[in-house]
Image (cartoon, rainbow, N blue to C red; front, side):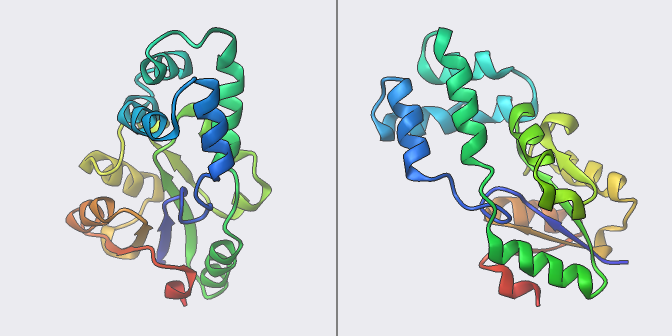
Amino acid sequence: MTWLLCDYGEVLSLPQPDESVDAMAALCEMGRNTFEAAYWRHRVPYDRGDVDAEAFWTAAIGERPGGRLADLVRLDVASWLRPNPASIEGAADAARSGMRLAILSNAPREVALGIEGLPWTAGFCPRIFSCDLRVVKPEPAAYSLALEQLAARPEDVIFVDDRPVNVAAARAAGMRAEVFRGPAQWE
């Protein structure tokens, strides 16, 4: 059985909308570019599950978020829950042709729970998140642990991700892997 193992962010979902990023930047009282640099600079430990939301936002802002924390978490989660309809249909077509679907995503606990709550993700089983694995892509352990959860051989998995570094790591783990260019490549 062949697996289609998909990254979630910017593969199955649309990119974060500008208005969400702007709203988070405004709550943090930061310019957008400064905010985005801080957001991504501190994201890996959060995605890995090494720190909680408060510690992540404290690092990103440079001070405790206080009463802003709930709004920042809500905005952040919502920004990642916008499905890419063409990708969802492309994955459904792959499933209809006999492939099994799964997700391997770098995501902190709050985002992972949001993804788990999306009805359309039910066809992707398992849904594997970095916060549960305690490793992030492109760390080699992310791929070996994913293979364990799939009970699959590397050559039976096609991995698709929008980041070339993650694709290269999947190839190093023995998977067939492609940089995501659009759902038409799954046909």
